Image (cartoon, rainbow, N blue to C red; front, side, top):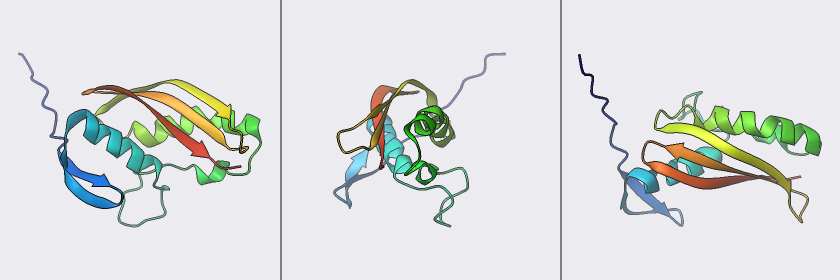
Length: 122
């Protein structure tokens, strides 16, 4: 029996400078979804489920070695809840000039792949 997998539409509002500005779909919608997820602290807002957002605030002010050790797990935990995201790869953690930590990675989705990053303040 051939089973056909159907992917739900990813069409959504484009948010540009805090305002709704038309529509986006597929890869552009995924980029916005990842950005929004990484900007939302998990468990803080009742409107979102417990599966939405990132638990990044716990890393603020922590030792660099701890941030490096936890970064990949936290990023994957936040993003892999979205069934349109296939994998998170090539996670790189580096210090910035402002003593923050920059976490860079590749997001592979059912629509294609793109690079993303998240900064954690010192």
